[in-house]
Image 1 (tube, one colour):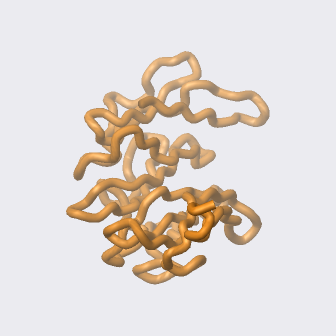
Image 2: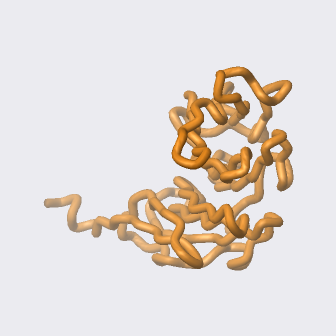
Length: 193
């Protein structure tokens, strides 16, 4: 699975800024110049602690200064953990290798979405919080500082509480002073109709 990020220089798109691969179910990245030649001496391992789920695509965005920010989830032990990482233009990880966990709660943290503010270096990550049996769902969020610190506590902020109402994966966009997050829910009765 390959992902390409298109960074913009003014209004002129520069193709092939970064490439992320999930192989062998790890997340690897490489930065490319606009002519397609690799910028970094070798492919970087963004996440290689465990495997990411089959068919999963991490959320990767340009940081607007030649680097990237990324959010993903992976199975760590018997739970899924969502992580966040910032990589600078030279290919160096700014936070601990394998990323900053967005929450330390003993729950499943899946389907993270990312809203990044290049002017402050802060990231807003939102995810689906599930019980280990994946029969209860909630939507949680975390604000990560430009130094990789969890600003909304170790377990994140509750946007929608964990309960038996199904909540789809969240999506988000940055906005002035924060982020907007979107999701949909489906009460259990809807499955019977």
